[in-house]
Image 1 (cartoon, rainbow, N blue to C red):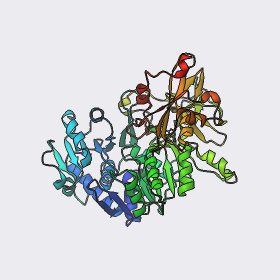
Image 2: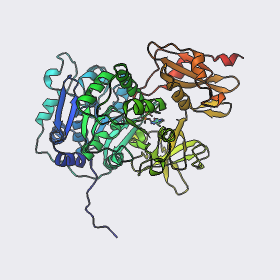
Image 3: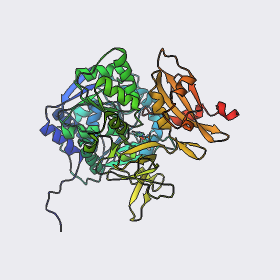
Image 4: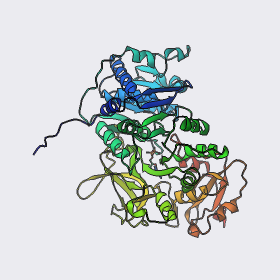
Amino acid sequence: MQALMMDQPLLISSVLQHAARHHAGVEIVSRRVEGDIHRYTYAQCEARARQLASALQMHGMQSGDRIATLAWNGYRHMEIYYAVGGSGSVIHTINPRLHPDQIAWIVNHAEDRMMAFDATFLPIVQAIAKRCPTVSKWIFMAAADRIPADHGIENLVSYEDLLAQGSQAFTWPTFDETTAVGLCYTSGTTGNPKGALYSHRSSVLHAYAAALPDAMAASARDCILPVVPMFHVNAWGLPYTCPLVGAKLVMPGPALDGKSLYDLFEAEAVTYSAGVPTVWLGLLQYVQQNNLKFSTFRRTVIGGSACPPAMIKTFNDQFDVDVIHAWGMTEMSPLGTLCRLQNKHLALPHEAQRKLLEKQGHVVYGVDMKIVDDDGKEIAWDGKTYGNLLVRGPWVVKSYFRADGGDPLVYDEQGRGWFPTGDVATIDEDGYMQITDRSKDVIKSGGEWISSIDLENLAMAHPAVANAAVIGVAHPKWDERPLLVVVKKPGQEVGREQILSFYEGKIAKWWTPDDVQFVEAIPLGATGKILKTKLREAFKDYRLPSADV
Ligand code: ADP
């Protein structure tokens, strides 16, 4: 029997329309590349997004076309998200921190029709424009007087000029909710990047789920500053979640250093933020060095790589900020799990609660997960036994763009497809998941596994350590042994023995790294995560002292 409810597709345009109508006066505040602060409301954002959609269509954008961006978090980027997606085309955010050759490869693979970019990235566009034949228009995201005279790019137009050509009478079209709305490429740490193609339905459902109280707990009372870039899995969905709940949105633009972020947090009364662990290192260092406190900042989502427990503790104890540890991936839009306490945990002692909150957390409705052994057999949820983590759900990919890599799913006995995450994890009796490692980073020593994340987390708790990474290096007897690579905090002196003795009593003795190497910096990838591949390459000729005995 067919139900008798209204047949209204879940389209992302409806999210911004909702904000424009029901949270009309709520602000979007952006630090612009131009250097100043720009502020307007959801109502103004929606009006400009419609006008931009009309202008883009006048310039040839058709349904299904991919429109690329190389841009910071800002109101114009937000307008492009909605103008492109809302009119049935596909917003393709590209990470500007990638190498220009890789960016050109991605643009050509996606066959992008147009590209909008912030002034900061003009040199990238100059380097790739001639190599991107499908791009018929390059949109400089500022007013025309900002464009340097000698830019040398054909078919370049100013964003503001283009937008002004659009009609303010444009109305959002209605179409099937399974239409593609966004395209994000994975970082391609192994082989070429692959595209995750999100639908309107998956994006709206993800935004709903993200807003739930045990997920991101986003509310109309919040002022949310996504430090996570809009080119890193759609800033974890916040450009959709914020208008959905009517939260004030603060966009940091290009200024992601500790001082600029802190100033913006204070000036705009930010209550809530989200980002990868490395960005918080800079902010925490700045506030600690200057003896500052946060007046309104109370919660932050940290994910993308394991959040060191020492960071959670600093945020909690020194700044009264709750950390919501989250896990996900590009292929999952990205949210999978978030770590919040449940009713039964409220009576636990503080330390036990904190231990739990260090985990990657509990799934949010919509995502299901399981851990399996190498034969695909499901493993018990005992919080100890680890296995390969598989997920499924309406905002998880079933295939990559252009079917690259074939069918990525593995099928269970009922024929249901599961996406193998490439992560190794445990799940406890209450369904809290903890990542042991990425399967390719786990250290295999004498047939047993050592978690590089656990060793890094412990090293990060040492007061003299600014950043730490652990990689497996070849060992004649044990196959692999852990090597700890450390960046010291400025002005701190600490030696190999002091760091290694810091592990005593905290882990099984055989897990202790065989050696420590001090470096000036640890290589970070385009999304701010430690690049283990680069690190392994840097230490490929390194021989452990223990290998000679
Ligand atoms: P990429 O694969 O391009 O780095 P993603 O951002 O999609 O991009 O990365 C997803 C991976 O990041 C996950 O599979 C996992 O290995 C890691 N990751 C994400 N969040 C966490 C977390 N909270 N703890 C540990 N690892 C995480």
